[in-house]
Amino acid sequence: MRHFAPSRLRATISSGLIRSTTPKPKTLSPFTAISRSTTNITNKPSVTFTSNIHTSSSSKMSSTQISANAVLDLIKQRRTYYPLSKDLGSLTTERINEIVKEALQHVPSSFNSQSNRVVVLLGAEHEKLWDITTETLKAIVPEDSFASTAGKMAMFKGAAGTILFFEDETVVKGMQEQFAVYADRFPVWAVQSDAMLQHTLWVALEAEGLGANLQHYNPLIDAKVAETWSIPESWKLNAQLVFGGKTGDAGEKAFGPVEEKFKSFGSA
Image 1 (cartoon, rainbow, N blue to C red):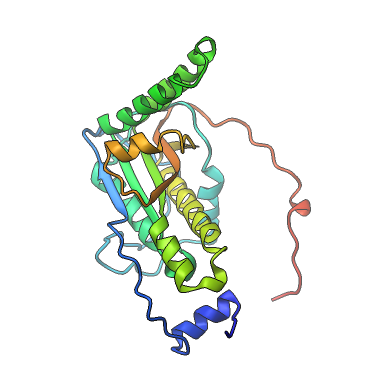
Image 2 (cartoon, rainbow, N blue to C red; image 1 turned 60 degrees about the vertical axis):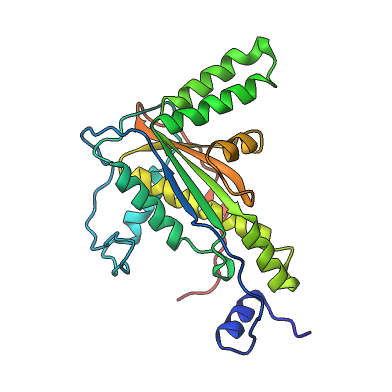
């Protein structure tokens, strides 16, 4: 069997030198939005800049006029915020879903495998998630130390919504079968793509003036989440992004010397 490096393999496949007869696994829609209520109050965006991006999911995105510095400013402003309120400003359910779907479609994945899956919970459905998490933890956390846990759950419930991030294991397994030489890498690449999606949406919500924090109560809540929202068995829960209105400033963030983390060779 002829072996190729991942980048060369992709180029070889696209050029038609290698053709696979293995059909891609069928998948369900990668996006689900569940909501019961929304709040419309004046929005307070944290960053403003001009762009000619059109966010219609049915049309191609046009070239942008924003600079790298504008993007980096948003990345710098993305922080972890506790607690969060239900104040979504002028953001509607439709706009939130549009942001999530655009990110879901355009965040890269290895071999364009598109294994990411998302569920958006708003209003009563969001609160239901944290009631489920509370009851799950109550069964395993010692009673004498549960008060602090209950307080954290109430804090998350007090936010406006939660984005659930999944990876479709059917897609990952299909890629492993189709490209067996890289079978051990596809689960890693799927997690990397999911992480990019999490960060993209966190930054996008920051651009809309919202705060967020990322939680990981999987796999404790996996079964109940799947049962409650009819999640396909192949969707593996990876993280929960809680979002809502900011109620204060983010805490101080320390940075190690960049010289210890960065190397550069050659010149342009």
